[in-house]
Image (cartoon, rainbow, N blue to C red; front, side, top):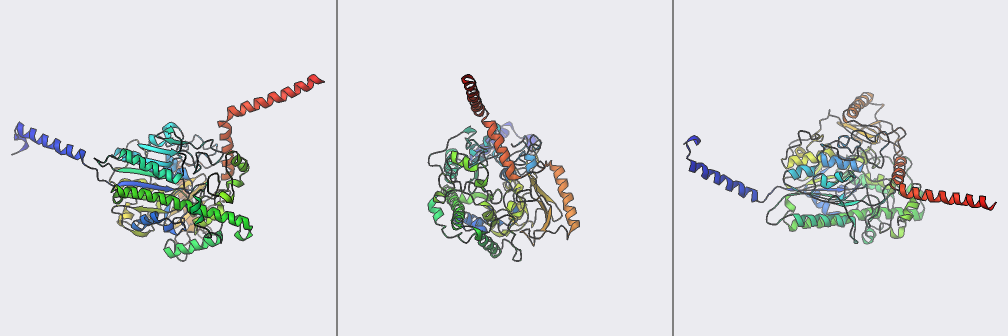
Length: 591
């Protein structure tokens, strides 16, 4: 019988059956995988234990063993651009976070892509997943815009406890540099205070578990997206003393020895080719043997604190994994673990005026409590070179040590691969998750994703996602890189760079020790043209002439300090003027 001759009763019965089916499906558990993205702050390529580091990281090691490790994954050289690209899949110049407020120059302010917040049409992974029925949560560092409309709750996160700064103290609610008056933490878009027993890694996991406990209903499963953005191992490097003590002696031989050890370990693990040379130490770095005994002890202890901070973070990641296991969710969760950029080389104590700022803000740089409450600990450029070994340079720079970082992907239907060697980028994370979950990419008025899905690399259906003749570029504050096949064109700004363009073959020289621009002038010219096209297509605005990262940070900090405290400074100036005038009047009267 055709549908045209069905009786009214039959049609009504079928409609009722259809409603029952739809209703039952609407109430059924949603069995799609959860997504957990873990971002470590300022970890170098060989800092993670699975990549050869000394820190004990058994939980991240477990994820690495059951998933895929990427040996040729590149982020950007600075935190906020990297996070914007990771969360959107879009080149930083199209997100609005082309650089960071701490180093932006006057000629960039107000330019398209340099607003310092996620601009209209830029959709985050949280927005995509929320639209697909996921619960969305973030805890930790945000640093993607300071207005109320710029915080995580306005960009797709159901719940969030976010630090809107490049960093902060890990034991207390206070800033770590003069650019900030306070440590600006927000819960669901509202200013928030930290608990008295605060330690950043513990708190970030505690609050994430709290959100999931409150929002995930046991009677009906809803998949979730958890974005855990740790402060470890950003300055100030801080960790519990007992963990720091457990690394006594590990770094006593100094940074030269560690650089060689990490290089050899990278070769043994298959992370880098056996014939690849070790990168040179950046010019101006100190010789370990020239240091005094007390300085050696202080610097060795600093690296112990960093290892302890990684171990502590990993232990709290382990608590989160145990929580998921207790809920029966561990085996149905996609995990992505990475770092936002290479290791931090800054020596804040050497910055003029920093010691005075530290005094007024309750910080010291003493070996007696290094890494504990009140301590301003850091590793400096020499240890940063070792953390990135066998690569060249570190955070802030587009050298491999600044942009090639660890990436681990593990989860359902992700086969174990010791090393995935294909080129991949931070913009590839969002399209990978969308394709893994079979969620459509944005369309219409949304800004288009510029990254590529890594799913073909993960499931073995392709060996590469970027062809050998396809240029891939990035830029942050004049630090630039373009990779095309095995070749890389790069330029780095002062103080550790010199603004000179260089050409390297990454297949044989990932440490960027042999500049090929004179031996391969045609290749150099070809990649320069490719880079110029990238600058034009993405609206790159180079920093002002004479740009120096450290000097610009100091200039911007002073400007912000004056702007934030103009009223108090005006009152003080008026009082001083009144005192001077009173003294002049009294002297004139007594004549």
